[in-house]
Amino acid sequence: MEKLKKQKSIDSFCQKNEPKEFSDYGLAKFIQKNKKSSVLFGKSQRSSSFKTENLKLYFVKNNNQPNFQYLDGILRYEKIICSKGIRKGKADLYQEIKERYSDWRNYVRDFLDGSTRGVSLAKMWNVSIVASLFFGMFLITFIYRYLGPNASAVSNRNKESQISQEVLGAEAEKIIKVDEKDKEDYEDYVSKIMMDYEKDSENEKKLKEDIEEMVKGYPMEKMAPFIAKQDRIVAAFLVAIAKKESNWGKRVPVLEGKDCYNYWGYRGIRKKMGTGGHTCFDGPKDAVETVAKRISSLVNNEKLNTPEKMIVWKCGYDCSWDKPSAMRKWVQDVDAYFEKFDEFEEE
Image 1 (spheres, one colour):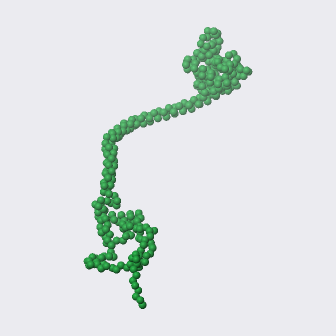
Image 2 (image 1 turned 180 degrees about the horizontal axis):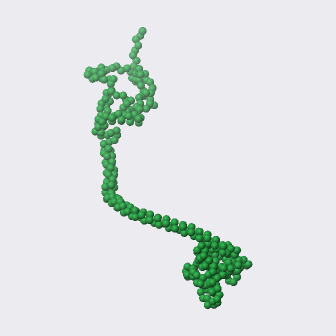
């Protein structure tokens, strides 16, 4: 069998390289010992034992990038599966920080190195200065508010208020005593008024009954309730003058054949006027109230409180034109019924 000849590639692509011998025995021994070990040179120390999955200090290739690799001298086209570093989540980061700074020595070591988890010493200094300014402003405000001039003024106002309250308290006691006395007087006054009212009510009722009994059967009988509400002297003049002037409503002025309710010969100017120039009233109540108002004015303002003085009702303030005999007769007839009210009062 013919011995095969060694073929040699022209481009030396598949050429087998013979290993070269090393003349440095010490270096060869070191390489032989440490060829399967790795050393990581970190920021603060050197480590010979580490795992790349936990350190995030390596370069990761893109998985989609094609790579050439020689296996057994044959060219192949494959993707290299590279390990990928995974960043820890927030919970893991918080747990790591908590565990690290549970030991005060780690905290001091990081502080002396110039940073604490990314916060530099200069930034921490700036933060402390700003915090000091805010605290100082708060402290000044507190001192000025509670220990300054305003606090003194408030204290003085409190003292003045206390003194004022003491004075007002003394005055209030006096006022209370006066009020109690006034209250008693007021109660007595009200009681007196109520008694007088009850008495007046009884008197009014009695007067009404007396007037009704007197004018019973006459047209004036329907005016008795309104006359009884007037003062006694006014009521007496109303009844006495009406008897003399109209015989209690049997001789009256009329308007269009209707009663004018004018039983006193009253001649006040109104829209409705009856026979003889006498006033026509709208009804018994209107008649009594209008004439009573005029008689009350003569009695109280001009003191015409007797039939002799009330003669002005017949002839006016100048009776020179009237007959003396007629004047005496008027006074005599009016006085006869005026005196009956004194008899009613005695009863």
